[in-house]
Length: 103
Image (cartoon, rainbow, N blue to C red; front, top):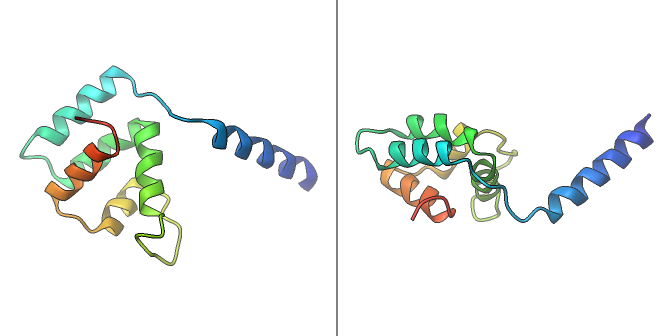
């Protein structure tokens, strides 16, 4: 049974590594753009919308788990990533925009 799961894991890893981008639905783009550009929004507001976009979530988690932000355990949630990046709201908005979501 372990051989089958190992085989599946290898196949999934190859598929993920070949995937160049995950596209965002326009509805999610609009919702996230509204929240990010709203001056009254908090990081918590933004982190509630980000998980709706798989591509942005993946890029944010990759950034949080990068060697630039050394941490002793794997970051596996958007909330943990926001906390680990330890950014103020303006810097967090800037990072989200730089991840290629908004111009």
